[in-house]
Amino acid sequence: MLARNPAAHADLTDPDAVARLLGALREAGAGEQVETLVNRLPAEGLFDLFRKQPWNERRYKFGRELDGAPAPSWDWYDLG
Image (cartoon, rainbow, N blue to C red; front, side, top):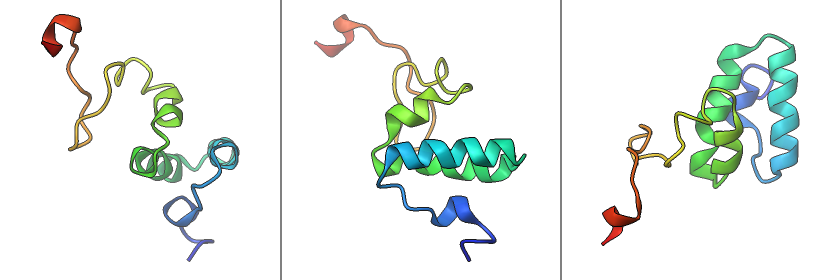
């Protein structure tokens, strides 16, 4: 199973190893696997790594909603 779909079954307990796996998948041209792995990151507590992905830095500047959508912008006055 891991050989067929490594991104769906990879161990995500080591953020450095996950980053290396993402790099290897990108280098191999496995875009679908990269997307699968990146989408697993927030649920595994790796939101910082999720946000560091080139297409996510600006899109998720204010976080992520429970449904996975980018959170809308806010400022300190919205907290009161």
